[in-house]
Image (cartoon, rainbow, N blue to C red; front, side, top):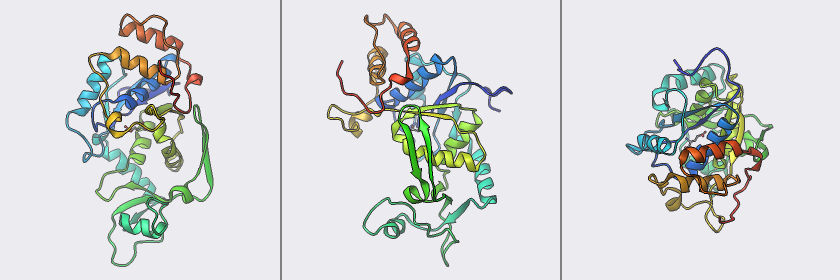
Amino acid sequence: MNPVKNNQPPSYRGRFAPSPTGPLHFGSLVAALGSYLDARANHGEWLVRMEDLDQTREIKGSADEILRTLDRFGFKWEGEIIRQSRRTDAYAHALNVLNRDDLAYPCGCTRKEINIAARPGIESAAYPGTCRQGLRAGRKERAIRLRTFDNPSGFEDLIQGEVTQNLASDIGDFIIRRADGYHAYQLAVVVDDAWQDITHIVRGADLLLSTPRQIHLQQLLELPTPVYAHLPLAVDANGRKLSKQYKDAPVENRHPLPALLQALHHLGQPLPDERPTGIDDFWDWAISNWQLENVPAKPTLQPH
Ligand code: GLU
C-alpha cells in the first residue's frame, strides 16, 4: 500500500526522483530544490522516489548517500520512499494492459539494424517500425515497443512553454521493456507518478522531450496527466551543458548553504541581502520568495 495515499486526491503533490547512479550533483540539486520549493510554496506535499530500476547503472551505496545529502540539506519528504526495483509487478501489469489492447508489440531488431534501417549512416533516428506487423521469420523477441501515432501532440510546460512532437516521426514506436528484461524508464515513471498521485512534475529540462512519450503512455493507460515544469539545465561558463566531469562532481555535503544559494540563483530567484544564518533561515527565505514565473527557460550565466 502506498502510505501517503488516501481517498482525497491531493491538490498539489510533487516529487523528486533521483537515479542512484552516483552522489547528488549540482544538476540534481537544482531539480530537488525546484520541485521542493514549488511544492512547499503551494502548500503541497513532496515525495522522494528512488529510480533504481536499472540495476546495471546503479552505484552501490549511492541511494543512501543521496538521501543523506537531502536530509543534511534540510529537505523534508512525506511518506515512505518508493524504490522502483520493488515495483516490477506494477510495471508488468501495465505492460499486460498495453499488450492486451494491442498497443504494444515484441521487437526482434538489434540496435545496429535499427540505425541502418532508419536512416543509413545516421545514428539514433526514429524507429522505422520494422516489427510493427509481427516478428520476422526466425527472429526472437528482444524488446517490447509501444505503438505511436502519426499526429502532432503537445503540452504546455509551465517554464518552457508549448512543446509539440509527432511521436511517430520524431521518435517512432519506443521501447517499454528492454532487451535485457528491465522495464523502461518511460513506462516505470508513468506508472509510479500515477500510483503516487503526483499532480506536479518539476524536473530538469533534459527530460523535456521525454514528456510527450510519457503523456502518450498516460493516455493509453487512462491515467491522469500531471502539470509539467522543466527547469533550465546547469551549464558551464561557456554556456555548454555541464561536462560529465563537472556535472557528476558531488555537491559539497558538509557545506549545504553555498550549494543551495547557488542552485537558488540558477533558478532565477532573488537571494537574501544578508547571508542566511543557517539552513532553516535559508528555507524560510526560499519558500516565501519562490516564484515559478521567475525561473528562466534557458540557463542565465550571470555570476553572483
Ligand atoms: N530518475 C530520473 C533522473 O535521475 C528523473 C526522472 C524524472 O524526474 O522523471 O534523471
